Amino acid sequence: MLNSTPHITKSDLYNILASRFDAEKKLSQIPNPSLLHDADKAAKRIARAITNKERITLVGDYDVDGVSSTAIMVEFFRQIPYPLEAIIPNRFNDGYGVNPTVLQRVDADLVITVDNGITAVAAADICKERGIDLIITDHHTPSETLPDAYAIVDPKLPECEYPFKDICGAQVAWLLLALVKKELELAIDMRQFLDLLAIAIIADVMPLVDINRTLVKEGLKLITTSRRPASIIIRDFLDKTNISSEDIAFMIAPRINSAGRLEDASLALEFYTASDTHTAYKQFELLGQLNELRKETEAQTTKEATEYVQEQDKIIVVAGESWHEGIVGITASRLVDRFEKPAIVLSINENEAKGSARSIGNVSIYKLIKENEHLLTKFGGHKMAAGLGLLREDIDAFREAINKSAQTVPTEDFLPLEQLTGILKTDEIDLELLELLEQFEPYGEANLRPSFLLHEAEVVTVKLMGADKSHSRIEIRQYPHQRKTVELIAFRTVFEMPADRKITCSYSIAKNEFNGRVSPQLLVKKIYNAAN
Image 1 (cartoon, rainbow, N blue to C red):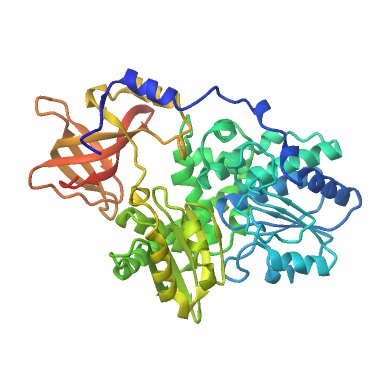
Image 2: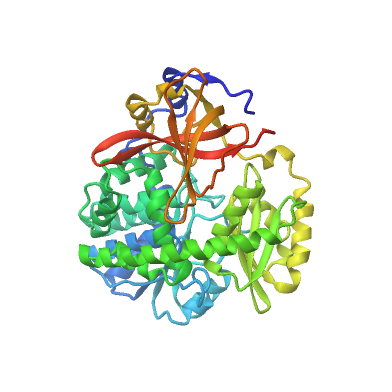
C-alpha cells in the first residue's frame, strides 16, 4: 500500500477533494420530514397531547446523540411553553433506553423516546397495558420483531421512504418537532437547534455527506454566534475563530459523553439546557473533571484488557470483573487501534456480562453478533459498533462462536480503511494549503481529512511533551537535501529515536492557532514499522 502512494501537489489535492462531492445542499433542500414513516401520525398525537394538556414524558439516552436529542426536545417544549418530564436513564441503575425499570417511575399519557426504543418490545407492551401511547423515535437498525407502539419513526425501517437514511437520533427528533411546530402553528425557528444537532451528528459518527454535511456546516457556524449559554462556553473554551468538526469530536463530545459513562447524563443535559453562562460554565467544569477521570479509568482498563487478548482470534473478545461499564466501548476502540481487529469488551458483574463492540474496515460487527444472538440476553447497534449482554457462563462459547462466524468474512474486509491521499512535499505545507483544506470542511465519516505519507524521513530530534511525557514532538527532514525541518506531533505516543534515524508514518494537517498566530500543524496518525 505504501509503495503505491502517489506523489501529489496542492493542485492534485484540490481535485481529489472536489471530486468527493456533488453540489452542496442548502437547508431548504432537506427532505420533507413527512417522508419519515409514522412521522405525521406521531406529530399529530404530540400536538393533540399538548392541546388537551396531557402528561408527556420523554425518555432519552446517555450518549452525546441521546443527550443532544433530549436537549432539543426540552428546549422546544420550553418555548411553547409546555411541561415536559425528561428522563435520561442511568446506565448503571436503569440500563438502556425506555425499559420496564424506567417505566416504573413514569406517570404519563404519552411517552416519547429519542435515540432509543426500536428494540423496546417489553416496554411497549407495558405501555399498552397501562393505556400509555408510546411514540418511538430512533435511528438504530430494527430487529425482525418491532415494539407494539403507537408510532415508530426510524429511517432504518424497511417501509420508511425518507431518502437519506444515515441520520442520527437528534436529527430524527428535530425533524419530528418541525412537524409538531407545523401542526400547532408555532413561531419557533428550528435553525436555533443546529448547534446541538451538529454536535450529535459528529459525535455519533454519521457520514458527513448530503444533508449531514449541510447541517454540520451550519451548526458549527451557529456555535460561534449562538446566545445559547452552552454554545458560548464551548466557543470560549475552544478559543478559535473557526470551529472544526474535529474540535467537537475530540474536545467537546468526550466531555459530554463522560457524564453518562461515569455518573449520570443529566449533568450533560443541565449543561446543554442551562439558562445562564454561570450555570453552563459550572456544569462544563464538572464534565471536564469527569472526562479526566474517564481517561484514567480507560487507561487502566485498556492495560488489563490487552493482557487478555488472544491474538490468534479474528475477533477479540475480552472480559473482566467489574470493569467500568461506561468505558468498555472506548477500551474496545483502543484494542481495535492496537491489534487492527474488531474487539468486544465485556464487564462482568456477578452472573452477567455487559459490553460494547467496535469494528474495523468493512467488517459488520452487528451482523456477526446477530448470527450468535442465541448466546446473548440482549444486543443492538449497527455495522461498526454495538452493545450486548450475556451470561458469564456463555462468554467462552460466544468468543468461539463469533470467531467461527468471522471465518466466512473475506480477509480484505479486516484491512483498516486508512486512505492515504498521497505524498506531499513538506515545502508545500503552508497557509495556502490550510486555506485549501478548509474549503472542504467539515471532515469526518465519509469525508475523511486527507492523510499524507512520509516515507523514510530523517528524524532529527525527538522530545517528549505533556505533564506525563506521553506525547512526542518529532523534528524531521523529508529529503536529505533539504535544509528546512518540520515538526510532527504524535499524541499518546512515546516515540524513541530509531536505530536508523528514519520514520515512515501517515499524518494529517491541522490549523494551529496560538497567541494570534496561525500555522500548519502536522499530526501523526500511524507510525509504520519497517515491514510495511
